Image (cartoon, rainbow over all chains, first blue to last red; front, side, top):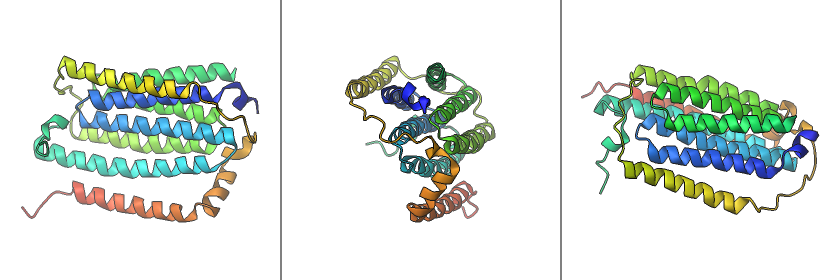
Length: 105
Length: 165
C-alpha cells in the first residue's frame, strides 16, 4: 500500500505531540470547566491518532481495538463529567474552576 | 497526493485545536473541536482504519459534541463570562505547554521507527477488527459494557434534583 510508505511514522508522532501539547496548554490556560473538558478530549484524541498510526505501521489490529475501548471510556467520562458540571453550576452558578477552592490547602 | 492530504489534515487539526483553546466563546470552541475531530477522522481514513474513522465521527462528532453543546445551551454559558487570568499565569501556561512540546519533540525526532513489518491494508476493515475484538478482547468488551451502564446510572443520579433537602 503506497499510503503508509508515503508518510513516515515520525510525522504522525509530531502531529500527535503538537495536538497533545495544545490540550495541555488549554487545561493550564482556561478556567471554564467545559473548555478544560474539551482539552482533555483533545489529548485523548492525540493519543488515539498515534495508536492508530502505530497499529497501521506494524500491521497489528490490536491497537485499533484498543482505540475503540478508549472511545467507550471517553464517552462514559464525558457523561459523568458533564453531569458533575451541571451539579456544580446548580450549586455555585458558575463553571469557573477557580471558584471551587475549598479543597485548597 | 496522500502526502498533501496528510499535511492539509494535520494543518487543519492543529489550527482548529489552537482555536479551541484561544476562542472566547465556548460555542465556537465546541465547533472548532468538531472540526478537529473531522480532521482526525480523515487521518484514520488515510491510515486505512475505515471502521475507526466512521466510529470516531459517530461517537465524537455525533454524540459527545452534541452533549457538550446541549450542556452549554442548557446552562446558558454561551455568553463570555470567563474572568480574565493574570498575565503571568497565561505566560506560565503557554511556557509549560511549549516546554512539554519541546521535550517530547526532542525525544522523538531522532527515534528509530521500525520499518513496516507487514504491509496489510486490510487491517482496519470491520471484519478483521471484529475478529480481533471478539476473540482476544471479548472479556474487556463485556466489561466496557458494564462501565457504560454504570456511567449512565451515575450521570442520572448526579444530575437528579435533590428533593430530600
